[in-house]
Image (cartoon, rainbow, N blue to C red):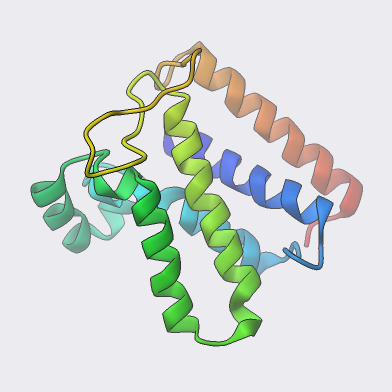
Length: 163
């Protein structure tokens, strides 16, 4: 999937969880920013990705040693990245930020699960998992998903206001 679709999926997931339980995940600029970072973080292993171009000094070594859609696209990495952020934050008041990052990260894995390439959820096992119905990156299916998530966000922010 393309970065725009990952961002729309991550923000939609964060917004949806917030609408169910705003105490658990308050909808604010900080949680939306954390979700944004989380939904782009798995592609740090690809130097041509949106985040990889900006953090090339991290992306190039990751790509060289791990390749694309390896460790960073696994549940192990999702938990590890969140644990590292939790260690860094070290206070309970950052819990919504950490939750939003994790939700964004998982939304990225879900998006790539929907793509024909699949994801190695249980890395280092090589098996890649994919949805029964998949979409091609940049294809009509991905465009359709992008419009659905954009419409959801427009509806949500139109009814509750921008945080």
